[in-house]
Length: 366
Image (cartoon, rainbow, N blue to C red; front, side):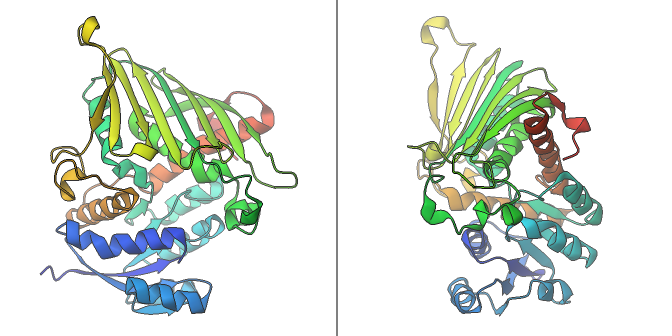
C-alpha cells in the first residue's frame, strides 16, 4: 500500500459536494493512486444535514466554519465546492496557509478576484474542476485536433442549454442570487463552454455579446449569446441559457476545419461525431464514434469496451490525474491559471454586454 497520505478537507455539501465526495471515494478503485486519501473534514452550513452527508460519504469530522480547514495543520488539501462568492476568500486563505487548493468553477466572481487567487497560489499546486475536459469523447476530440486531423479551424460553435430557468420553485437557489452567484448562466454554464473552447481551439482574441433576463425582477442573466474571434483566426458562436425548453443538460460543441468536423453533446457523452473530409467524396459522412475503447483517452481506467461511463467518472478522472501530476511534480491542467484565462474571456464578454462593442480579451477589466 502507498504510504503517502493526503488529508482532505471538502468545503461544501451540496450537488458539487456530492460529486467531489464520490470522486474521493471511488478514485482508488479505478486508479493506482500515488497517495492514500483520508477524508478528514467536511464543512457545510447546516449541521444536521452535514452530519448525515458526512456519514454517507465517510468523512471523519464536520464543521460549519470553513476557516477550521485552513487553520488545521493536519489538512493537506482544501477542496472548495462553495457558492461562487466564497471562492476567492477561501482559496487565497488556503493558499497562504500552504495548502493544495482545488476549486469549483468559476474561479471567481470577477477578473480582479481571479488574478488575486492566482497571485496567492503562486508556487502552490492548484486545480479548477472543469471536469468536462475528462469526458473521454472531449479528450479524444483534443487528440484529433492536436494531430491535425481537422486541419485549419474555421468555426468553433458551442451551446449549453438547460430548461429550468422558468421554474419559480427554484427562486431560493443561490444560483439565482446575484450576490452569491455573481451572474447567471455566464458564470454557471458559459464558463464550461469557454474552458472547453480554450482547451480545443486555443486563446480568444476578442468578443461581443448580449444577455437577456426573461423573469421580471431577476437580477442575473437567464441567457447569453456571444460571437468570438480566436487567435487562430477561427470564428465562434456561443449560447448559454436556462430557457431552452426540451434540453435537460445539452452541453454541445461543433468544430469545422479544412479537414473535417467534430460534434459533441454531453447528453450523449460517450459519443463523438467525426466527419473526415479526406475520405473519398462518395464515402464521406459523419461517423458516430463510440468512445469506449481501452486505447481511447481516460476510458481505459474504467470498464471494458462498450461499457459506457457517466457524469461522475469525469470527476474521478480529474482528481486521479491531478494526484498523479502532484506526485510526479508535473504540470496539471486546468489549474488556477487556466481558470484565470476563462475569467479574462468572460470579463470581455460581460464588458461587451454593457458597451455593445467588440471587446479585446487583453484589455477587459470587468
